[in-house]
Image (cartoon, rainbow, N blue to C red; front, side, top):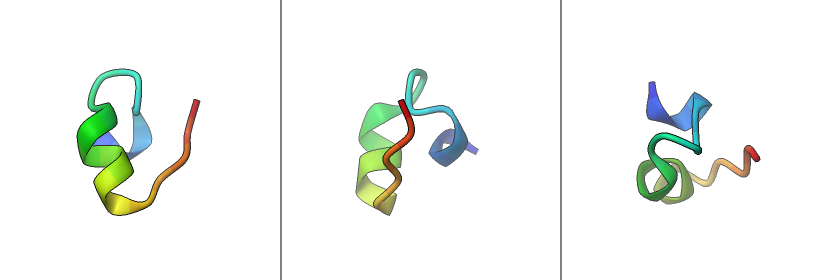
Length: 21
């Protein structure tokens, strides 16, 4: 899922509250 790769889907990850860099 994009929540595990903010570099590929920052918008989706941020929307889920994920803060991976």
